[in-house]
Amino acid sequence: MGVINEIREKAKSKLKTIVLPEFEDERILEAASIIEKEKIANVILLTKDKIDAGDNERYVQEFYELRKAKGISVEQVRKIFEDPLYHAAMLVREGKVDGYVAGAARTSAEVARSAIYCLGIDKRINIASSSFIMVVPNCPYGENGTFLFADCGVIPEPNARQLACISIATAELAQKVLNLTPRVALLSYSTKGSAEGRAIGKVEEALNLLKEMAPDLVVDGEFQVDTAIVPEVARIKYPDSPVGGKANILIFPNLEAGNIGYKLTQRMADARAIGPLLMGLNKPCSDLSRGCSVDDIVDCVAVTAIRAQ
Image (tube, rainbow, N blue to C red; front, side, top):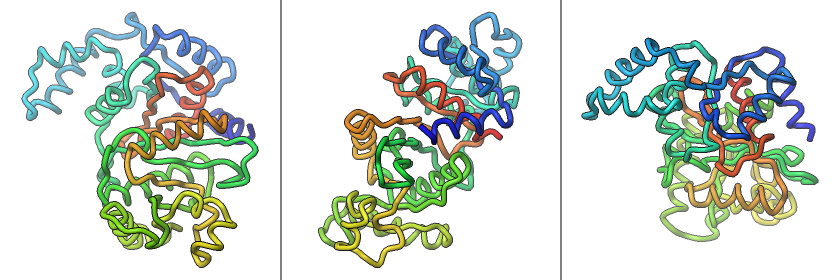
């Protein structure tokens, strides 16, 4: 696929160091070998012999200071740091490496917590969320079959402001990684008032907020997904939209819809799904689906490296 090759080549243009804490997973080992061989990034498999005891204790104390207001004890933090996931996150926080990728053997919630607690939230975006780069073969929609879907992994029921922040973060990622001009569709079961409901009002409010927060962003909604991506349908349902029929970023109204949407697309259209790419953090981190392939891991590392450039 052209887009996948472009991502890998862009990662190679300025090598970054990405840490992989799930060193016991065979897929991670195979992916690390490919990444090193193709010079996509410098990778560190965070085996126990690579964890400096002094650094680890320092990270324990730093993490305790970050979280003690929540009632956590130093002993509880030491227990947490028995998992190399948190050591990886603190390496990124300190700037010793450029990013980390995990999730092949851990849940999205576990990876997201490590990232939020250790890397911190970007105050400009003010919310952590996630997106997938979806590459759909033989598809005329989106950007020649390339889309970004969000949020598919973090926020169960985003409110209007959170939807707006997710839209901005996803648009910025699209520009950074894919050099896309974002065209953002806020999805719903309604197209511009064709139905009623509280959920539709939330999407309408998100659109109004986006016009204030990011006036240059090309965004519209609420849209049913066919109106968002199919030109013929858009011409019938809402012909005057700058986004209708040509959206390349799809913002789902909640996590349930987003997660179902990306998995349906991945499995039924044989699409590549790169992510979840965690957004809204101070440093780059990517989650993985526990059902990920070796290529999924390679491409997540490549995207994480690009985001660190």
